[in-house]
Length: 376
Ligand SMILES: Nc1nc2c(ncn2[C@@H]2O[C@H](COP(=O)(O)OP(=O)(O)OP(=O)(O)O)[C@@H](O)[C@H]2O)c(=O)[nH]1
Ligand SMILES: [Mg+2]
Image (cartoon, rainbow, N blue to C red; front, side, top):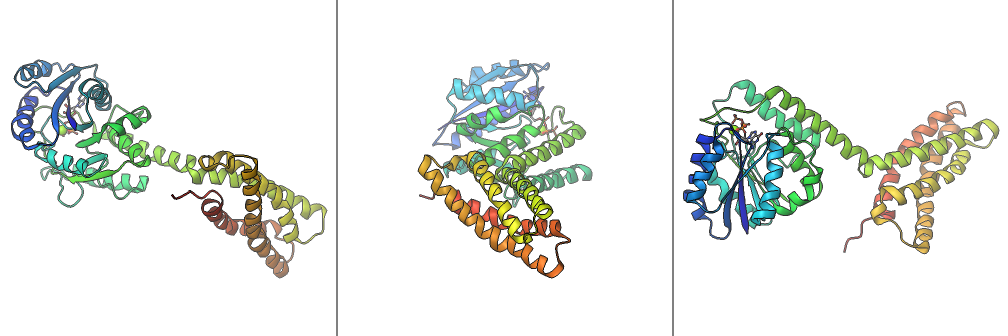
């Protein structure tokens, strides 16, 4: 495969002069089954990084250089990846810092994972075999370690140990699929967002333990405080969206609509008819079931939507049948017992309690019986 190592630079003249020869002379000769190239994504560094790269390009022909406005690391990567695919024929792209914090000797390990079928390989500092610099101050260590634990908890993805690291190998398909979805490009939130979208879309992620070392040359561009706030903001918003617009969020909206319909009709029964509460609740459930079916069919489980009139009728009949099992035996059943024990006084409390129990039953039925995914 054609592999392009992308190195973003901003004032890394000294470092680029070390990392490029290391890759060319020590690493690339070890790799026999892939075609290796380098792309430097410089943002018009005032220190003349680009001129240094041009000198290196005279010696090695597999190096490209692109220059752009400084709009942040994510923007530089986005631009560089598009270029690597379109102009260099890249099938796999590496993200690698110029300052030698990312040990180039690990490149073969990343490629090994790609060869084994991974789509997105991340270098991880926080799993067995990985590490952060010992000389980091306590506060920076705490931020770094707990920051990543916090991200894993908020996003509820525990199998990935390092969300913020920037040593990665990414298949072309992942970039083509996710690049339009990545809105945050200024900071390292871009790294989290890129990985999170890839995970959500089912790309295969693998990890390689890395020993992150501190830069010895040049100046850091890290702005700690705004970075941490940005990361937390991203994670909370991304997680909220995932919950609200995922199947469960939709299920709650549909169920909420059904609940309101049934609740209103049930209350009309209590007020104007002296029927048993359980019977009122059962009759009131029927229009709610009709509404739930159609909303779910058009929206929540629309990928598995029933096609054609016959399929619609079949499904709605099954849906009425299965829903009524829950409505009768669980919801009306609970209301019946409570009315028998305590009278009509707390009719609305009975209804809410019985509905809560029903909710669990319904989600299980919707997902596994009515709109179940076909496994073939
Ligand atoms: N093209 C481009 N490269 C950038 C930009 N910001 C950072 N970089 C590069 O991205 C890589 C990572 O940046 P660093 O400043 O090393 O960030 P860091 O590793 O978190 O911080 P340090 O502890 O200072 O090393 C380096 O190669 C930088 O030159 C940018 O806006 N544009
Ligand atoms: Mg660095």
